[in-house]
Length: 290
Length: 290
DNA sequence: GTCGAGCATAAGTGAATCTTAAGCTGGAAC
DNA sequence: GTTCCAGCTTAAGATTCACTTATGCTCGAC
Image (cartoon, rainbow over all chains, first blue to last red; front, top):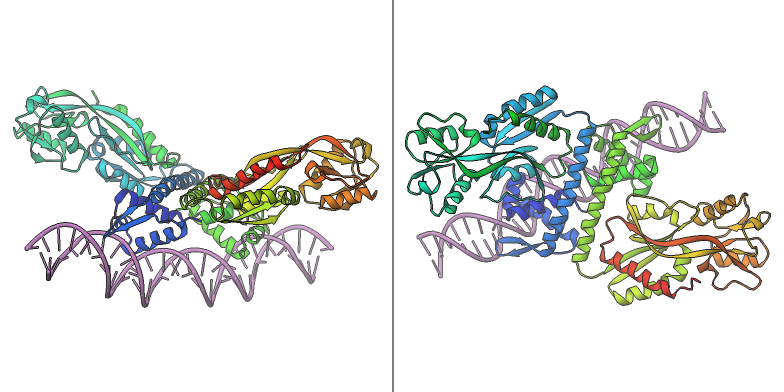
């Protein structure tokens, strides 16, 4: 019988590309991962990995097995969720990931709602950029995460992750009537590697120029303070712009972002996940989105 | 992560009812099964087994998990089948179960066809009564089996077994114009516990009487020889009655049976299974069914 | 009351799986 | 060309896990 643990390692290899990266993700040594994948290959009776020099790639059979690994692991996830439901109402620890703005605006009321409705639940929150969420979910470091996707940035598609939309919001530009009008300005963006940073670059490229990015700041309050101090322009989401500092004018852009709750596929029936998503949804109307 | 091996044990327990029977089926000691199921319960966090005296029954949560066990094991079966397909054409050993008549009439041409088309295949045949087939399939002792189902006998439904119809045939009665006319005769049936035996009893009950079963004989040629010797009447399928001995007249009954190829659900994509079923099907037209 | 079927627990053994340590390979830097 | 380093594998040892054997418990049958 095929071992789901080995299938999980193969799936991680398909996403991460190197055995060392897989080992790091599951906190094993590369040696252990290599041995397990070799054993999987032996049981499979087909070559799954192509060793070319100091790197490995998946063979067609390997890719085929990865698809089946998704299906197997999803069913196991469903079984675990069903057991959690059988244990009774939502209880126990639930690890929640959230991007900084959501952690500040959405989570406080949502967590109050959540623990109020289900005293047995112990939410544990980690700030995390949406770009890293699917890896953390798959690794089991998180159970559910708040992520967003932008118009210009293709959503991170991952066969093993499911996402449920919560709300959308518009984006705003500081002190200029349009992105094109900010062609020659200094720009303030989030740190490289974050989704927000990618979004800003792409939005400027769509307007026909490369932004002159001078500052990398993740906290939108700080971003707005920089803008107020005349240090540059920035694109901020509605939620981060509820109380702009004096002197900063905001122009609504024809650009939106959507916030979603993401979790491992098959885990949606988990009572704690369901309760968390319900609490997120309940907290949405309290946000000032217009 | 839930262990599919333990899920398999739980599923067997659901079907067999006692830990000892499960142990016997998987050739473990009862102790090992007990320990594994205890471990599964611990991981599940819910009671799965109800210990009442010296017997165990599944709790509702246990039954729930059995349903998920089916799904998980089916996906694993699919993955294995995909790997077998990736290994290339059908090859290696394939264990075939068949009821005696099929072994005699259908298998010779089917096996010739099969090994002719796929020289790498090594078919291994075991005679087995349809009533025992699903257990043998689930236990991995067989890969594919020829079974039949009768009009009066509800087919053995098993969520983990899939069956593909091959052909149907009529049943015949020896030396009497109808079953009702054989009310006071001695009867020859197959051995108790076989599907054919159950069918004969039910057919007589449907005609309003309990048969006076005097002989239990599995081989239909012997059955017909007994009938020719005036030792009783019997119901035989068309395939077993191609050359009735002199003195035996056969009357077609408004009663049929269907022959099917059964295999583990999810295993239908396995190239060897697919080739075997195709060979069975190819051999059907050579049978004298009317 | 005794026996036996059925399950659980304790203790021991062997296999599987991990880590540590060492070696191999190929690309990049110099 | 040489050196270095990233990445994978293999070997050897340690730990954990899963099974067997042995024993005890409980309940129902006789």
